[in-house]
Image 1 (cartoon, rainbow, N blue to C red):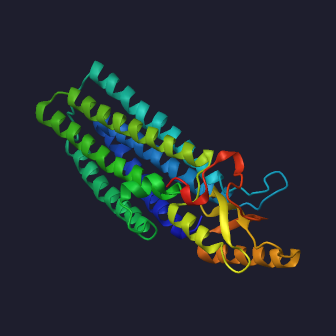
Image 2 (tube, rainbow, N blue to C red):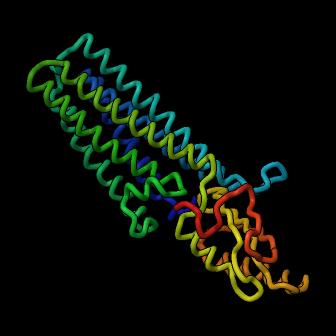
Length: 319
């Protein structure tokens, strides 16, 4: 996983979360705040998730084998899916359980009352910096897309995961600060439970969204629309008259499988066709910033030429 793929954002988030998790845990032991415990577990889960993303990036770099002939690029998607499970269970469900437990037996915060407020304010500052790093990293690759569109459309899991985790952490800290502040103001521990419940619902929602996105990536997504168009425009050239149909599939965030049937001139010899195919492959590799595995089938174009499995022609691919 390259730095442009989100490594800097992952490391920045991991560094922030480790320190924040320790501070929140200390604050919980001093005050018994349910919101602080939920936030501490949230930070521990986030730290583990960032380690998983780094491990997935490393495992994806393994060389292709006889069994896995297209390589291990999808390992990044698998670890991204595991992250969503951890966030749902360790983060969200634990926070909801803690909220129920605290609401059943509420206690005010009687000692070290300033500690949770101070820790949460410092955590907001640290998480804000981590989120800024993730936004900056995303800005280098998302182009003109908005952040929500980038998160939904990205073929790499790391930056969307970090963006959602950091955003969720910031909102969760605000919920925790609200619960703690209301508990201190009213001496009613049920407000602390409300803060913990809000954190749990937030994390569960983010985890479900992440799981949905990772599931789509694992099933296999086509090239980004701009890459699809670039490939389709690059294929025609000397010896290749047009693209009859084309299919693309991400083997990993930075690896793309391209399969296409292309029209060659009537009467072209085998050497001419081979040279045209080689030239078309070079044009495709120059057109997109991805490692492309390209398989081209030459044919003679005529109206009504059968297409594979009734799929839409390249020009009609959904975007």
